[in-house]
View 1: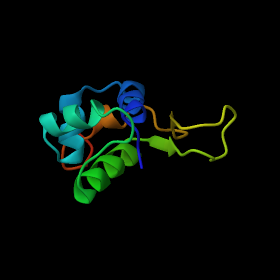
View 2: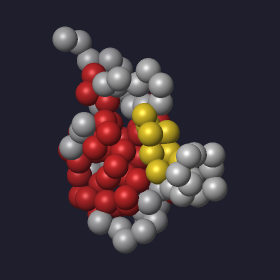
View 3: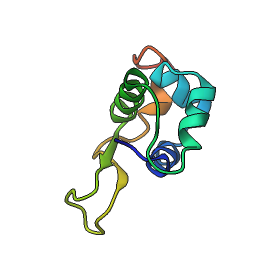
Amino acid sequence: MITAAQLRAARVLLGIDQRRLAELSGLSVPTIQRMEASETMVRGNVDSLVKLITALEEAGIELIDDGANSNGGGRGVRLKAGSGDRAENKTSSGARARK
C-alpha cells in the first residue's frame, strides 16, 4: 500500500510533475491527481495501483512501510542508491530517452 503523502513525496524526490508520473505509469493525469488528493491510503483499482508503484520503483523510489527498518520509524520514501535522475531520462514506454 502507498499513502497520498508518500506518493507526493516520491514525485518531489524524483523531480517530476503529475503529467510525467502519468506518462511513466500509463495512468491519466486525473487519476494521479485523485490518488494524490486521498486523505490517507491511495485508493484505486489494483491494476492502477500496481502500475503506479511499479513506475515509482523503476524510477528509483523505495517505499517504506509502517514497521519497516528505518531510522525514524513510520512510513516514508527514499531514493534507491544510484537512482540519480532515472525518471527524467525515461520515455513513457520505460526505455531510456535519447538526448
